[in-house]
Image (cartoon, rainbow, N blue to C red; front, side, top):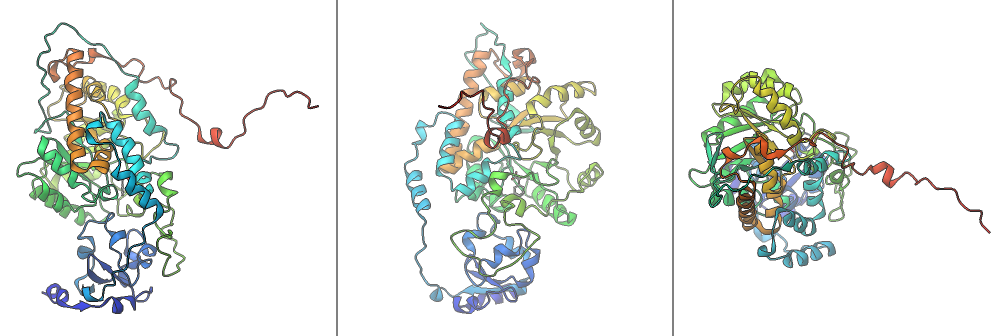
Length: 506
Ligand code: 173
């Protein structure tokens, strides 16, 4: 009732602009005015970024980073001040920077979709057409970015041993993931903040996934709200949910149970991010703080969020670093969904997960964004499958083993499946597809993977996924890390090269 009353109130932009200080801070989001004075210090991204928009419209900055209802749900109703009187909004022309104009031209001139032949093409286009900050956030990985390279390199150290003369007229990769039909042995893995890359954000994935029978894992930190995503799905479209566990377990419980009520089919709890890795490309963008578009309105010496933390660190303070094995029974008690631990790297933890009674694990290093120089999921798969085989049936119908990280080709998918993976996750590959081309890009990415699968299964001599056996790959070099020595940033950029004996001058 109160909210209806406050919505009826009309407020002029003039009145709002008078509240532009730490002592009284009003902002506009999506045409509504809010008093955020008391919320300033609770804001997970820090007060500074809000104060930058004190007394003005914060929608453009708010939108890619928050689900639409975040402010509505988090501010007490009495802080909802009312609707901004449209007659008082000055239609000032937005200043478009030169860089942005150039970007728009590049976007308009991007290659037509039928010239996109593989997932690498999408990535190359995204790099050019994304705003620098978005590219930095999506593409970055932790520290020296050695693991993100290794994720790709590991697939190249596995070679095929194809079989011949098997009548491969028809090949069939029909399968299920956690009991849900999937048209590919691939699911769309969670990536945060989709609206940094495209105005429709994660909905591009939901719509294309629905059309093609692919399963999307909804990220906790999507730009679109959970309900918007579920509403965009077809009636029986299976969806999974990725979960960051909140320090406030009641919030987590409500979120998980709401997801289950809305029909989500599995819960992937992220276990490799008690603290977010330092993604330096992202940090250097100084996402939080003063940029050239709007000078900070209120000068502040704020210590809780450093301005160079990068977008993900700024919004991840709610994640609970105390999460432990002891919490698993609690998760089991609040939901009937299958529970999968996302971010397992060792046989020791794989066995603990099995013993804890969860329904699966994702061998993942978070796209190289967490512990740098951790091994690839593909490499870990070998030891983990061997360990699981000593503890019961294999493949175990009640315990799935997924792999993600660096998957861009159907040949990558087939290698992981041959070595025992139940299915693989692709995160960035699909994300980059929608950055440049929206939903149609994701359509195309799915079709490319299907085409590649068909061809590669024929050439391998595997007519279905059962015939895809470990003998079809040579993984003997997988654990040999000497082949591809990554660039050493310090040595290559700062140290002076040794010089050789020089001739006397003159
Ligand atoms: O990898 C990430 O960037 C990520 O998982 C994340 C976590 C918290 C906030 C935003 C993104």
